[in-house]
Length: 452
Image (tube, rainbow, N blue to C red; front, side, top):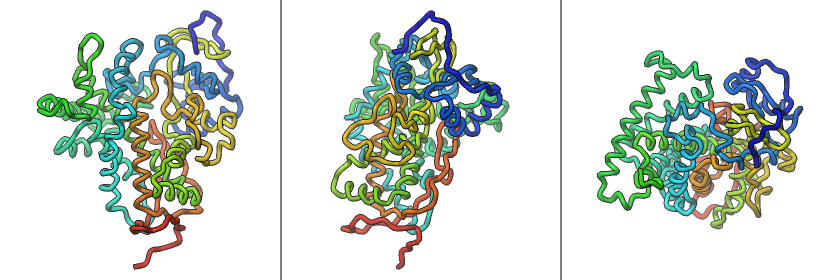
């Protein structure tokens, strides 16, 4: 566990690259930049970044464990996401306030509660895939975005009718733009009019707040409020230890946080899953056979492996609130520490033959929480991890049940940054063929075509 210390500062070594140059590298090609520096310096190094200044980047599992188990009184949030999502977001809270909020938010996302949401997710998958073309390559990222957005609007927001329709139109332009603004310096987050980037984000946010206020009012007036299990209703009913509720403004911030953190990331993971499976036909055949037999072990292992080899969020960031010790290093107060998910997942010391896509590595056991970290860790581990895992399982299970996937010899899709998340550069392209009742599990090459 990391601890407060008065020992002299001792930051890890790192490259002598000007802050501006390093900043450009992190903004335009952070995956390659981090990998390149990591190959030279190993599991801990220091870089100078425009937003954070002198920053320790770690991937060694012992250091990550130290960081994740350090008290939130000693390490806190970074401000960028909180500035975009609002003061009531968990990304904006620290210390006792953060712990109290998290205590209220964990129960709605308890693993057992996820079972009640599975039918809704499957309904949204079936609705979306009804129009998927057969025998013709298409991008899956946008369809996956619609599936995860609709599922969250129904299960988390409790939205239906006109509110559902308007939020479904509002979020697709709002979330990517807000995501890009979150990784920009604060100087760019200025409202310079309705057509400036931050001005558009603010306009979207004002309309979002109005819709959420209506949803909250409708929930409170609902005679069946006590029987509702959407997260909005559960948050309205939650009480702190002193008996006070979460304020309506903070509920709006938290709902936006849950959607921002879970919508695009889950959809992108699904697109990466399709991209990977098309290039591994034997695995695809095994998965389809398992789904047909009612199993799930290989499917879960495959999800974990997709998240390992193609993490859609490349790092999680903390700031030292006091001078702290992490292993042999002493981090000054106010300095950032980046736990590199990409480096941790790609390290040979953590995963043998780390560059290979091999779900079998996870069969028979759960991933280690200090080497496999797609949801972060510690007290700031993603609250919606169980929800995301449920969505991934239900969506992929349904797709494997309904379709044969055309496989390909084409090179894997490049990693493309979308702001906070990374995605397949070509959108996770797929070729599908509808399975007939009673058909056996098969795969097809892209060169095959269905004839009438």
